[in-house]
Image (cartoon, rainbow, N blue to C red; front, side):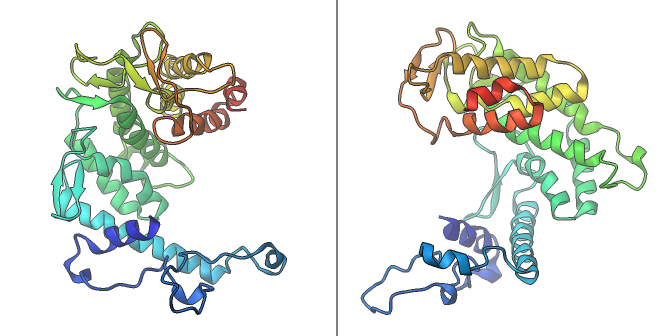
Length: 318
C-alpha cells in the first residue's frame, strides 16, 4: 500500500516521471530473499528473526536519517507543487487527469492548501508558509458558504489546519515573521467563524453531533440522525484548542460531552459500536472494532488526554 501510494504521488501529474522509477521504499537490494526463482513474491520489508535483534542497530545513522528526511521532503514538494500547478484553488487534485476538483466531503476551495499549511513549516519553508497564509486570508472573509460539509472532515482538515497554522505563525521560537505585527491573527478569526458554524451539529438529544452541517444554514432538514463513532467522537483536539485560544469553553465542552456520550453507550464488555443514533443513543451498527468508522475515536482519547490532562479521557481509553 505504501509503495503504491508513493508511486502515485511521485509519477502522476508529472509527465517527466511517466517512466519506470526507483521507489526508495522498495529497495530490493536490502531485502533478504529466497533464491528460488519460482518464488515471485518478494516481501517489501526486511524481516529479522528474534535472534538477530541484539546485534542489529534499529536506529539509522545520522547520514541515513538525513537521506530519509530528504526523500520525504522531495516527495512532499512534488505533491505540493502538483497541487499548486494543477489543482489550486480547488479543494483537491485529481492525479490521473491532473485537474482540480472539489473535495467530496468539504466542497469549499483551498481544502488541500489549508490542510497542508503547517507541513510547510515542518519542512522548513517559512516563506511559502507566509505566502499561503496571505492566500487564505485574501480568499476567505468567513465561511458563510451555502454548502453541506462533513463535521468530522471539516474539523480535522479545515479547523485543525487553521489552528495549527495559527499556532505556528505566532510561535516566538519559530519566528516565522520578522515583524510579528505582519500576521494579523486572520487564521484564528477564521477558526472562530468556522467553529461557530459547526456548533449547530451538536444540538441533539444525546449531545452526539450530526454528521453533516450546512455552513450557512445549520443542520440540513433531512439530515440522518445516524452518526459514526469516529466522526462524532474525534473532534475534541481541535475544539479544545479553539477553546484554549479564545477563552470560550463551549467548543471543548461540546466535543468532550459528545465523547463521553459515546462512551456511556458502551456494552457490558466495554465495547462501542460503529454507528449510533444521535437522538436515541442506540447503536445502529453494533459491530465493534478499531478500523473504519471508529478508529480515530480511540486515537483522540489518548491524544486528548495528553493535550488537556483530563483524566476522564485516559479512563475512557484504558
